[in-house]
Each structure stands twice: as C-alpha cells, then as structure tokens.
Image (cartoon, rainbow, N blue to C red):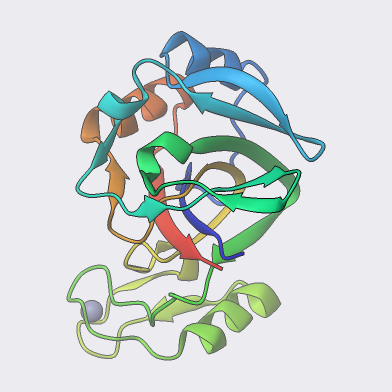
Length: 192
Ligand SMILES: [Zn+2]
C-alpha cells in the first residue's frame, strides 16, 4: 500500500517542541480522539482540523473490509474521511522525502541548485553550505527551497491520506504553531 502524507515540521532542523505540545494541539482542536494503529498512537482530526488544514481537492479511497467471505470492497469515499494524524520525534535530525522529491531551488532567485541526492548527501556528510552560482546567495541545505517535497527536522506532524497539492496548512495554523513553539514551521508532501 502506498503512503501519501502531508508533514509539518519546525524550520530549525534541531528544534523539538516542548513536552506539552500534543496537549496544545488538542486545545486548538487540531487533534481529535487518539487510537491505536498497529501499536502506534494516531489521532482522528479534531473539530477545527479542516479550518487549519485547507483542502483544495480530495481523492476517492476504496476500503477493503474483512468479512466471512474474504475482503469486501466498500463503495468509494472521499479521502477526507480517512485522515489520520501522527506525531513523531527523533534524537537526530532526519530528512523526510518520498518518490515525488525534486531538485531544490535557490530560495532567492529560484535557480536550480543541482541533484537532490547529492545535496542531501553533502548535508549528511559535512553539513555543507550551498552557494547559488547565479545570485551568490548562501544558506544551509535545509534552508534551500525544497518546493514542499523534502524537509529536515527532529519533529513531525504527519497527516496520512493527502496527495501532493491536495491540502496545505493555512497561514493561521502556521502562525499558531510558531506562537506555540517560538519556531517557524514548514510543510511538505511525501509519497512513498
Ligand atoms: Zn540564487
């Protein structure tokens, strides 16, 4: 089964939100009920979720339900009904990207800066700085314009069942996250 997700993460690759961050997301009604997903904790969307994440479109999901005769195919339903949210963190900064990754652009002049795999390798090996040959702008590799298809972080809010471009956080939600944590937030779409 393929995975299509929208992930939000702090812009500072080393940043981790305070321990009560999940409670704050609950207070914003972003997170709804918690449930067990094969041993992991996941959340249903809260009552404000669809105000904080704006959907441009959805796709149809066909659910297969186990029954006495094997798997029964249910009628197609809009993917908004299948949204699940997962919070995760790690000790080390990692990269999230999927098979939809593209080469990054200069954040100032949008000049293509080379192969994404070489750049992630350079970040991993030496934390190298990238310098744009066109406009001369220099920045860290996580701060390049990754076109919302890759991100570098230690903390992730991952929303399952969202295809690339289908939905994105509103500016209001990004501001709320920044206010709650003192750190700017970014997002990406990942297809695995
Ligand atoms: Zn440039």
